[in-house]
Structure formats: structure tokens, C-alpha cells
Length: 70
Image 1 (tube, rainbow, N blue to C red):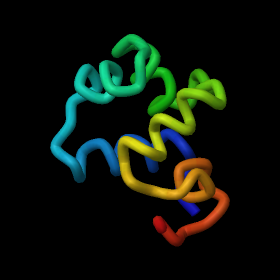
Image 2: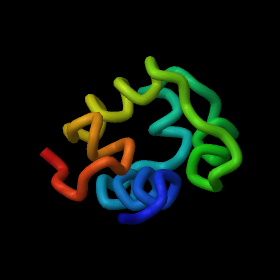
Image 3: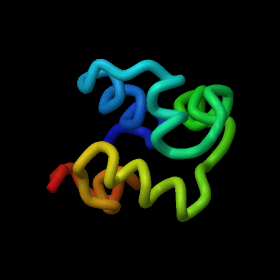
Image 4: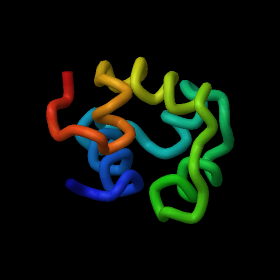
């Protein structure tokens, strides 16, 4: 399985979103999204849930516990 940060980056890019776009939807700063994608910071549970909702994916997929998106 791909690392968390790479998965978030790939999903964001597949949906044509910038880091700023995603940050606004999740309620964090662009630098937080950059840190998530770079593996320098882990999101809190609330942000993980919002990431899953934003991407329309399961929380297990976002957290890299499965390779099945839905």
C-alpha cells in the first residue's frame, strides 16, 4: 500500500484540487496539507473524517488500511 501522504496527494490531484482547495474544505491551512502529504504531520481524527468525506472514500482507504476506495 502507498504511504498516507502519497495517497492524499494522489487523490487530491486526481480530483483537480490544489492544496489550498483541499485545505479550505478540511478547515486547515495549506501548510498543513503540505505537511500531511510530505509525511511531516498526521491529521487529527476530525480532519481524517473530512478528508474521507471530501474524497468520497472510506476512512479505512484514506488511512491506508485497505486498497479498496469504497
